[in-house]
Each structure stands twice: as structure tokens, then as C-alpha cells.
Image (cartoon, rainbow, N blue to C red; front, side, top):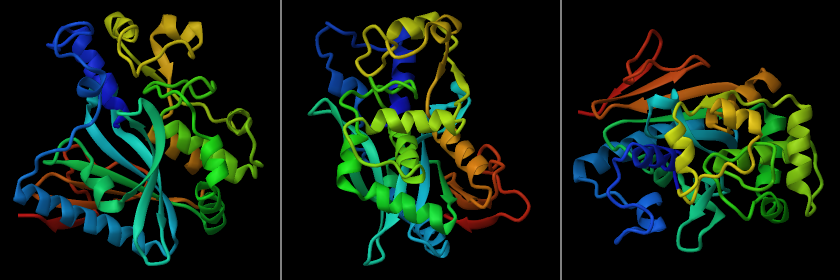
Amino acid sequence: MNIWRVFALAAAIAAGAAQAQPGSPGYSTSSAFCDHAQQLTAGQQDRLLRFAAVVRDELDAMGGDTALVSRSGLDLSRFHIRYSHAAVAWRSDTGAWSARQLYYACDEERPRIYDQGLAGFVIGADDPSSGYISIVRLPADAAQSLRRASLDAPRVRHLLAASYSANAYPFSTLHQNCNQWVMEMLAAAWGGLADGDDLRGRAQHWLQQANYAPEPVGVGSHALMFAATFVPLLHLDDHPEDDLFAMKLKVSLPSTVETFVRERLPGSERIEICHDGRQIVVHRGWTPVADGCRPGEGDRVFPLD
């Protein structure tokens, strides 16, 4: 489940672009708001697998076995968002990388934690003709504490909410999205929080004490706010009234995860890898690669043609 797919589709519904409305024939939660397997051509699949191989090589070159990864999804330029989905990347004893992440299980209608192979995580972007992956390499001590926490089954279970919301408020335990799960996992790891049924609440308190403060996302449309009343994976009951009136919702995003990590751990490093169907660009540093996956000075370029 790509959380911002929900926002994009809600925007389409609010604008009257969707054909199927709740209650109308053919409408279903699963078909409208859940990810569907893409039918890729042989050429697209080859380019995406080559892109995934470059991502894997960059992870291998870090020298550690745990990192933060994020991927792009739908075109969210209207929200000024490039990345939609964050996860914890970890390497097994056999050397294989996986992305541990929260996803929404459509058939069960609840969030789950899922370990996905790196290639699947990379290929999971919505547009096979272009894509962006961000890797944050953590200092060794921070990486190891995150690895221990994220592979600790009881803590993983107690950090998982029962209710999914694409626009979950970061300081409420009512709902959760994938990026908020990552943030609470960072809190459990770096705050040394003991396991327990109240772990989510203690993790959020730790984040507040650590000055985690996501920038509000401007919704920009009363119609989109109204769409939350019938879009099953959007909720407003966890957000402060002032934010609702201002139509600016505080939501955990990959960008807010990375900002928090950069400020708390100055020794962290960031690598951004993108492709436009013709070439792969590897860009290092906290400044974003240029829109359109255009390489800058010092970037490495791998042709895909």
C-alpha cells in the first residue's frame, strides 16, 4: 500500500474525476485504494532490475547492515512531495537486503509488517518509466540499535497500530501510516524503550521530547478534506482542530524522517538514486537531485539505453 496513493485518489474523487463512488455499482475499497500488480514489459522489467542492482550496490558499499530507505510513488508534486514510503533496510547473514515496512493488507483491512526483497521494494514504485530511491546511512551505533529493535518481534508487534490512516497524526495512537511506524521504531531503538503494551505512546512522547516536528502538509482544498468522510483510509479524528481549520495536516513523511535523522545524527549520510528510463543517476548529499533525474556535478551516471 502506497500511502499517498490514497491522497491522490481522494483528490481525484474530490475533483469528480473518479468513476466509481461509494455506494455505486462496482465500487470497492480494495479496487479503488489498494495497490495492484503492474504489468511490465520485458524492457521495463530489465531497466528496473538494473536500477535495483545499483541500489543494492550502494547499500553494500555502506559497510553496514542497516539503513533507512525511501521510495517515490505517484506524482505528488501538487503536495510538493517526492518520497512517499519509508522502510528499514537490513541485510541478512546471507548478504540479501530486505525492506521491513508497514503496509496495508487490503484483504484483511488492517496494517501489517512485511519484509520485502530489495528488488520488490524498488519495483513497487507506481511509474516504471521513472523513480527515486533515497538511502540514509546511519552511524554504526545508531544503525545497530535500530537493527536490534526492528528485528525484535515483540517490540515490532507493540509498535503496530490496529488502524491504518494515510494521513495519520504523529502524536496520536488512533491510527498509523508506514512512515510513522518507522519514526516510532527509531524512538524505541534510540530511546532504549522497553517493550510493553504502551510502547507506541512512550515512543511518541520520546519523539516530542526529541523535538520531532513534521512540517504541515497543505491540503489546499476543502473538497479533499471532505473526501476523508468517505475515503476509507483517510481519517481526520486524530488531528488537532486548529490544523483542520487551517487545512494543514502534520503527517510523517520520508522527508520528515530524514530531517529528524540528519539533525539528531550529524554523521549520517544520504544517497539519492533515480532513473528516468534512459539513465540512472547516483547523487550524494542532503540536497535533492534535480527534478527529472538530471545529474549535477559529481553525480555518477549509468546509461539504461
